[in-house]
Structure formats: C-alpha cells, structure tokens
Length: 282
Image 1 (spheres, rainbow, N blue to C red):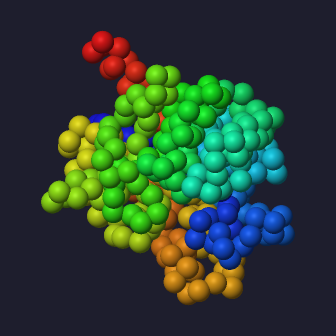
Image 2: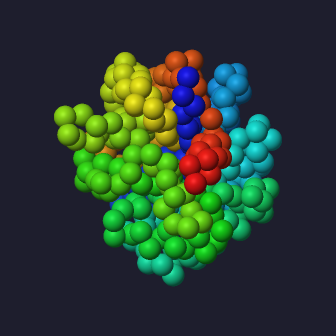
C-alpha cells in the first residue's frame, strides 16, 4: 500500500476562515476553547489505530494549551506550524508574515516542540501572489511547506498548474502539495476537510484509490473541530453555519474507516522518502 500523508490543522471552531468576519480575533479569548478535548479525542482514535500524523498547530493554541502540544509529541506525532494567528497570507506581507511565523515558532518551542520542520498556510493561502512566503520559510530554516493546492477549481486558493507531486520548491525547501485528482482535464481537490464531510465516504475512497493508482500519495487533512457536532453556533448566515457544521456527527466514524482502508504516515516521513528518491536520481 502507498503511504499517504495524514495531517491535522490544530485550530478551534471560532478560528476558521468561514467565521473570520463573524468572530473577530479580538474576541477569541472570550470564546469557548474546545480544541483540547477534540484533539485528545483525535489522538485517542489515532492511538487505537496505531497511526502517526503531522499536527500543524497554531501558535495561539500552543500558548493557551501547551500541554496539548506535549501530548501530541509524547504520542509520537510530528508537530509543525500553522502560523500564529490564522491570518491568511493574502492579508499579510513579507514582514508581517515573518513576525507571525516567528511568534508561532517561539510558542511551539516553549511548549516542547523544539524541532519544527513544516508549515501550512491558513486556508491554503499560499497562492501565486503569495509565493514570497517561501523565502521567509527558508529564512527560518523550515524544511517543507504543505500549503499549495494544485487546482484552479476553488475560488479562494490553489495554483492551477502547480506540480502534483512532492518537489523541491526552493534550494533548501520542499513542497508537499495538497491532493488534486485530474478528471476530464480538470484538477479537482480531494483529501479531507469539507470534501470529507460534505460528500459520501465512498467518493473520498474512490478518489484516493485513483490517486494511489497513479503512484501518488494523498495528503489528507482535517481539523479537531470537525469531530465536534456540539460546537457553538454563532449568529451567522445559515449558509455559513451549514458549511461549518454539515457532517460533523459522522467525521469520527468516517475517519476510523479511512484509517482501516489506507496506510498513513506523518508528512516528515513523506519528506524523507522524497529526499531519498531525489538523491538516487541525482
């Protein structure tokens, strides 16, 4: 079986892009913090299945529940950075991103994650116009990014002609791209998040098998809040509530099926395999 990458973007229910204009950042401290219980539930599932993953943790979360970061590490998982404040790159410039990244790394280090190799941009916002962020990542010694969706099918993210496979994107930086499946000349995003919750499990399984049959691993992602059907519902348009909450009650069961149907490893293992393959070809 192909070893697919399993990743978790550790943010709480009120920090999603979906609620960005509904719940301002200066009110986050007043929101109910549910990320610890939800992440520990996820850790329990992974532990029972004997699966390791990469956890992209917000620095804001690490500051408030540092013990959660330590638990992730103690369970044998990789800790990487999701930035500090969940600000999309399109809302930052190189200098403000540099500060956000520095704060996130400091917070993760203080919580016990002393070797952070990877980064994922909030809302996959590493797009054509924000590739300056790659140079900042190399400045801080990060070894890989996993932010680029090689698709043009989504209005908010994606680079339509980006490589589908793991590749060196800067001299000392690798890209582990999110997963897209080519269908009738179009690249469709697959592999987690809303796609996993909104559509039948059989569709996710079919798409992942197709990608694996092409010799490509899938980079699957989810969030702790996606296992939480009882999360608060803010005053928001109905379509936003639907987008955030549809399928939450079945995510855990679907995840367990997924872990039985496919092999998964942390992204750091995908990086090591890619480097070894590249060395053999050089």
